[in-house]
Length: 115
Length: 114
Picture 1 (cartoon, each protein chain N blue to C red):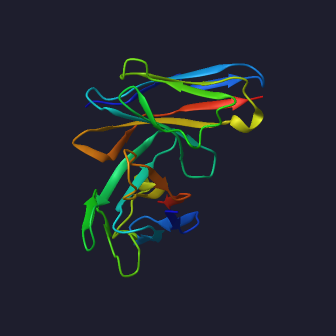
Picture 2 (spheres, rainbow over the protein chains, first blue to last red):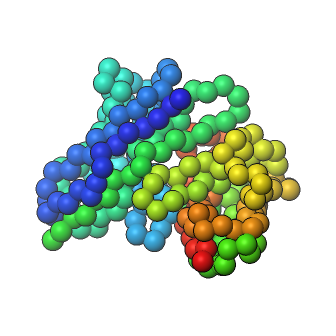
């Protein structure tokens, strides 16, 4: 079945450092890909998305490119801030038949940014 | 900005007791989801509604969990009896007919079973 694998955390960085969180997926066809962020004590928020190969999703300085050849959707940010400290989830929605649009999540990566 | 509302935010209960969570999706969102997030893991789908109908409850432990969305708007997730392993965050999400793959999540209900 469809699945998402993301790098284990925690990832600890200093402010203004470059961030990469790796995400790879297994799915049939062309799923839609997402990054969600969960700040402490809060629900999940959609960070960015891409719906077809070579699409680049971007938001709040974060970027991720849908790479079908490597089945990857790595999250990057050029200069992280303390306020970016959160858990980041990679997710996909497959092209399964029927009425479902089941969002499948990775296990999450905790990012801790130190001043 | 429209939000998915959930209550209660926190619930502590003893095992074998009944517990219920409520969710009010964004107005106009026909699809409603209940996810369970165990600490340190990603959310897993428990049940998905399209209007008032269940379209996926394959991962719902039906011996103790039930979910309903009687009028196709708000929804209730019930656990009876609660077990220690049910301690988790219960997340509700909704999506619109125009963009069914983009889910909007509520803040969640954190359950602790003692």
